[in-house]
Image 1 (cartoon, rainbow, N blue to C red):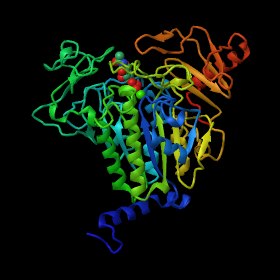
Image 2: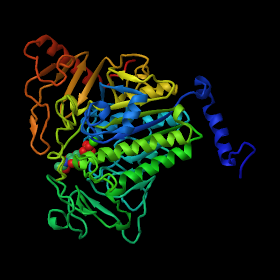
Image 3: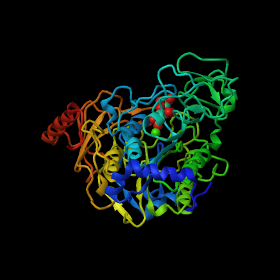
Image 4: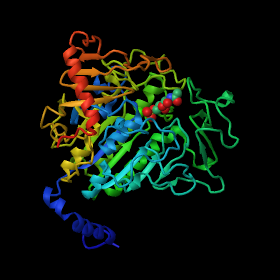
Length: 513
Ligand code: NG6
Ligand code: CA
């Protein structure tokens, strides 16, 4: 039933309620805070987009976002792999401070404690409708959770009002979508079982039945076969609920668009975490073969298409001018990440890391320095920013933007970089701890990588990991590609930076008071 203002009674109730609960915050900022859409790509490198210098591939929608917004050239994910980056982004705490925040198995329990202050909980508190669509990879439920029941705690218990997820990664079981607390389309007569130890059920594995595969592993990824692709981990059952890789980008994009449509009359925060361009790289037919760079290039185009749909939706709904859009990636790029999709051989001179050294998993810059675009039409002046910023900063930044106070224990490593984000200041953070297997400290032009025993090189991925038993010191202003280790020439600087890094570690926090 519609009221005199053309809104439903239910909507009117919402508005009334929102008014009662949030009058103080709305009054404080004049209800002017923008909607926030955070588009989070997976494994996309600093050099993968034409707006970041790629010449062998064109990404017109992301280029449009860059042209209409601010393009950051020194922005970082919090870690060089997925789970720790996402953990840090949602909690405002560096993941290396916590055990159990490494790349998670597909049946891992939730690693963010319900009740703690998170990026979505802060925005929800400020009156935003909060949604997450796409890759989660932060665990679900408690240890031993039954995938056939209620999957909780999960995103709804840490600040999201709505969730449509892939539980872990595209290459890990269970290969099903989860909406709020339930597996989507599950037939109760065909229960799901998941195991990362012993095989479950009688389903064929890629290892025993390579003849059944449409995409073969190059390393790992030889357990249960789903949709012709063998995965990490074993699953049985849930046949009707299993995803089709070719349709995944469309499915997630459709859910993201639906969330925007449903919340266009409220303030909203959408965290849209794409599966692209992670492995297995299985583009929809309309992108297959289009890039000329093989599947990895094709899924970059698919990602660009998803971004275009989100931007078009914001226009169509008339909310683009009051929506802050951020686009970034959870870690740097990798070519061979475990499937024979010919990414290396078909790269044809494309440089996923751009001018940077290393890639995903690496302590060198390409591990965490990622594309980072911010658009707010009429508010953010288009251009390029050299400010040092990190995704761990979103929490403190959006808390400041929406006038939500933080307790001292909240978001211990999150810095309010709002001025840099809006292009009002050329400066962001004054230092950053980068995290791969090892830690680095960046301060001004200097980057110190602490000594570590890990391997220098991973032969499967062919990535230089940045490990060295000796300290490394680079001047990123003069040597962005980290080629000249100056540690032996500047022992005092090495000592000072090592001491500061130790201090940041032992302080348990780094957010300015
Ligand atoms: C690795 C996987 C890799 C990828 C990564 C996580 C193997 C051999 N490699 O263990 O394919 O899944 O984990 O990627 O299994 S991330 O982007 O989610 O961090
Ligand atoms: Ca990733």
